[in-house]
Length: 436
Ligand SMILES: CC(C)(COP(=O)(O)OP(=O)(O)OC[C@H]1O[C@@H](n2cnc3c(N)ncnc32)[C@H](O)[C@@H]1OP(=O)(O)O)[C@@H](O)C(=O)NCCC(=O)NCCS
Image 1 (spheres, protein in one colour):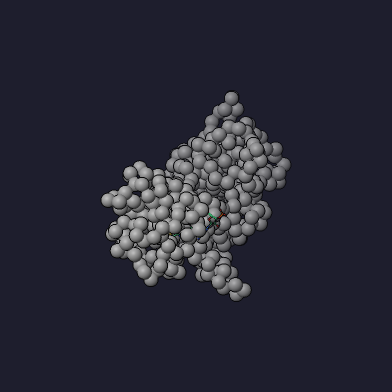
Image 2 (tube, rainbow, N blue to C red):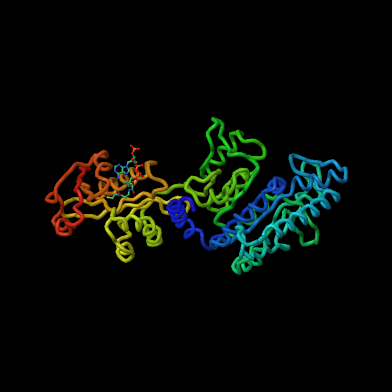
C-alpha cells in the first residue's frame, strides 16, 4: 500500500456516515442511458458496498433509450404528447422487452463475485415483482395516452420484509392495474412513489446530466425544497435536468428528507455523494440543510464520535459517554445530513455571571468554513440571553483562534472560584475571557 496513513484517515472519516446510514432506506434510480454507457457493472460494485454497510437499497431503472432501440428495430415512429410517450400496443411490447432485458442485465451485474474483485463474497439477491400498482394517465387535451400510466401505489408491505432480510429490490418502470393491464411509467415517477411509500431516507438519481447551474451560472450544490421550487420556476435548467429536479423536489416536499442528483460520468459518484461532506452532485433537502441547534440525548453518539479523536490526542479533556449524556443539555451542535459536524458546550457559573465555553470542535472535514465561528456566535448569544456578562475558555491549542475573535488573555484568578478549584495543572491550559 502506497500510503497506509492516508488510507486509515480516509476510512475513519467515513465512519460517521456508516453509523448514520446503517439500517436506512435509499431508493437509487438511474436511466437506461447509464446501462448504455457501460456503467452498470461499476454501479453494481458501488451499490453492493452500500448494501454491505447495512443500507437498505431499492433500485429503480429507466429504459428510454432501450425502448427507442426496440421501436427503431420495428421501424415504428415514437409518438409524444407534451413530452410524454404515447404508449400504443407496439410501444408497450417494446417497453416490456426493454424492461425484461434490463432486469436480466442488472441481475447479472449483481451476481458478479470473482475473487479479488469488489463483489467477491457479496452474494446479493435482487428481487423484483409486481410491486407497482399503476393507473392510466388517460386522455390529455383530447389525446389518449393509451398504456402510458402513473404509479398509484407501491406494495411497501411486500418490499419491506425483503429489505429487512438483506435482499435488494429492483423496480422497473412498468406498473400493473387491478384490471390486469401493464402500464408504461417513467423511472422518475416510480422512484418518487417508492421513496414516499417506503419512507426512504434518501432518493438518489444517478443521471446523464452534468452538475446543474442556476441562472447566474453558479453550481447548484445544496438547496432546500423551497429554494428548489424557485429554481424550477426560473426556467434555467435544461429539460432533462429539470425533469429530475422536479421529481427530486416532489419527493422532498412529500417528506423524503434528502434527494440527490449525481452524474454517472463521475466514477463512484454515489459513494462520493453519500460519504463526503460536500458530495459531487445536487442535494435537495426537505428542511434547511445545515442546522445549528441545541443538542438532545440522541446526539450523544454523534458528539462522542466527533470529539473522541481530539480527546485521544490531548486537544480536549477526556469526558466519556456518561458525562456527555449527563451534560448534553449544555451542548449546541451543527448537523448536516444527519451527521454531527460541530459542537460546543456552555457551562453556566451564575453567581459570577460568567459562562465557560468548552469542547468547541469542528470536524476536520469541514474546518475553515466558518462553522467554528458560527458555534461561537451562537454560544455568545445563548450566554447573553441567560444574562451572563463574560465568556471564558481554557485552551491548550487554539488560543490564537479565540484571540482573533475578541478574547483576551486572563489569569486563573479571573475565573469563578468553583472553576479555579477544578483547574487541571497538568494541562496548563491558557485562560481567555471575552466581555459580552
Ligand atoms: C478551533 C476550531 C473549532 C475552529 O473551527 P473552524 O470551523 O475551522 O473555524 P472557522 O472556520 O470559524 O475559522 C477558521 C480559521 O481559524 C484558523 N484556525 C483553526 N484552528 C486554529 C487553531 N488551533 N489556532 C489558531 N487558528 C486556528 C484557521 O486557520 C482559519 O483561519 P483563516 O480564516 O485565517 O483561514 C477547529 O479547528 C477545531 O475543532 N479544532 C480542534 C479542537 C480545538 O482545538 N478546540 C478548541 C478547544 S477549547
